[in-house]
Image (cartoon, rainbow, N blue to C red; front, side, top):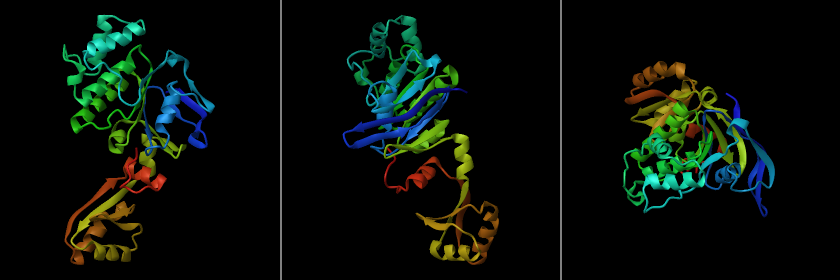
Length: 299
């Protein structure tokens, strides 16, 4: 897959504050690219520049020729007319973009799962339905690339699942490239093909899902009746990277010694209620890079 969007030292300064600092992002055609960072890290600033809503202080971005017709954008809350139907909202934007037909609007509603909303006013929609309408508005004019800032923020589990399914459908069935930010890293990890981590305005890492799996590896999670004493026993076995993780014991690596560790703990009289291997998550990797604590959300 070719690169549909790249940035070259993209920078934005507000007075003495640098919101985005020489950022070089590479988004491949037909993928979902997840942009990760805390609140104020610079994600929205980058998205606004890429979308043409804000001018860079220095640097530039390049959109491939096939996507030069424009970028679809959903940043912050979707701008909708609450007293009108979903159809009317899209129709208004289509007329402004000179691409209106009833069939075209019906197709967009079908694409985002809003085909059966009929005459219902947008003010009666759930937050998830409003977000999907916002995505339909971003798709008006058939852009090859859409930029979505926190599209699942504040949604309940059902709304999150609906938006996730919509994004996967756009990628898999329509070949649309999507840049999306979210502080719900577990959800982003499920759908994104590539990731960029922004910290204090700087891109500190960029990687594919496959690279993430190779880098992260696995860890052992153990639950016993006496974790502190069990940790001492495990360390005496010569096992490194053993730590308390909430109400469990965590061992990074040493996967090949799971059975031996379990057998030793049982022999030593510990009640091992659970022992299993786990993949290190996107969230784990994010915090390992940024040095953040888990009680601080990535936003």
